[in-house]
Length: 389
Image (cartoon, rainbow, N blue to C red; front, side):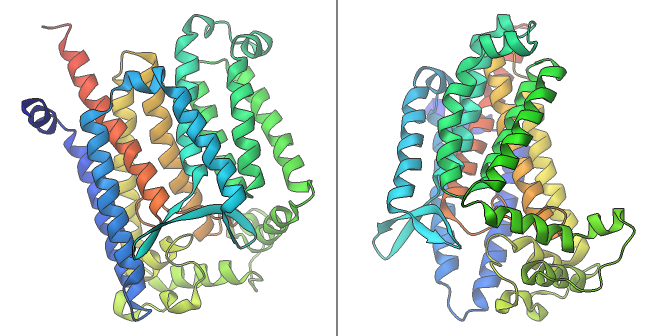
């Protein structure tokens, strides 16, 4: 009991503050959106998810040993593969994609989205392999890199193939960008990383033009027709928005102006905007709380990410350093993609906003990730105290 109290006393307060603040904002927004439907079922489910996730975060911080992530990693990898296969067998098709399956739980059900766990699993795997072969990092030209770090490709490809069959291409992109960042932070040569980026780019082109991938090409076409950034670079103005989702997302954002319409006067949540609880929740925030409220949310997110990066930079063990960097950047890129879709800065895709959007799997996996960062923070404090003791 004394150990638990000691751990709670040494918890990373800035990280906890940002985490809990985001969760409270998320609960408020979900209550606001749910109230438009006349019943509170979705909010109550989100509240249950939140309580369960905060508990998981706390248990991770108090009882997880980082050594388990190395020694027992293959259990995590095996469970991830089983879940990725299971969703293809018993998953529910939503908008043409089979990414989620549901576990009945009394009066409600828990949604399980294995691709979210897969992203965390691959971060742990990359940190594990890179740190275990640290002696090869200095000689990371293309061919020595492939030779010395071949497991990175052998065990990542099955995960990505299964996610591709789920039609969750955005999860692959976020994961790939995160892992490339981890390689860069592990001091893999820039030339090697650039070559990997080109390889992934051509693999992405193949995925877009492969049979069954026509919807991806269509989304890119919609983006090029309606993107404010693309039109600005072309020196053109958008006179007509041809995509319903993009049009109503931009209407919500521009309606908010500086300080927002307030929740009482917001209209996007009344079915005008598709997926207001998940993919386009940032549009609701922009409408009802304006640019001011949107920037506050982004600042809180950046506070969480920067704190996570700071914790990671203080680690003396390479595995912990890369693990922390990967988790922090995974949250950051997830945020960027969701906000990018809402603002028509990137092609539309189904990515939720961490801690804000409705969803059990996202909240749980991201909360466990925060728990790991809290654990790394405590370990960094212990490590930094040792030399002077």
